[in-house]
Image (cartoon, rainbow, N blue to C red; front, side, top):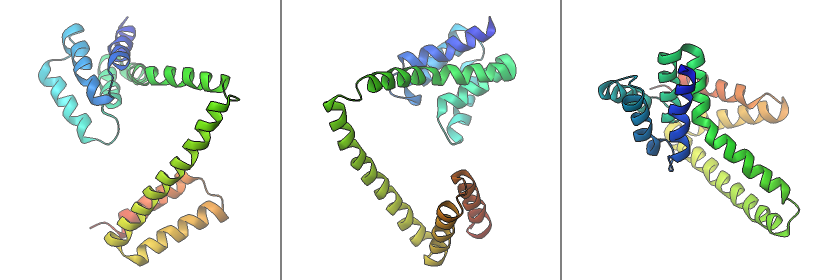
Length: 177
């Protein structure tokens, strides 16, 4: 029964909370504090502060923590799944609709318009990263990171996750203040 309650405590706010994590916080508070009495308002505030201090979505961090406190590792998994389930269900449904109408001229036109827009947005983001790197770390560090990353990705076909991890380690060792 506890796992079902954990699921409902995070699934319902995910369904009715329009606007992302911050919009669901009061709904999660109602479920956790008032409906199931798992914690006090003060404890919830501390969990919220901790969730805000860590990187990533607030609701998933809170669901993992509260689920773990109430139901152990399985409770954390249930809480996390319940938090992402509404988005997952909606994405699967929308992809099903898109796949059904993939040959439609309107969908093809939409795809034709969206692809270049996404490419331009990614290009602008990459340029800003290069610009920030150049001004914060200098041209030598930027060229080293870009050059080595390019070689690892394109020539040696290293998985991007390892390139990112290597870049983080490089930054921590050589670029830390």
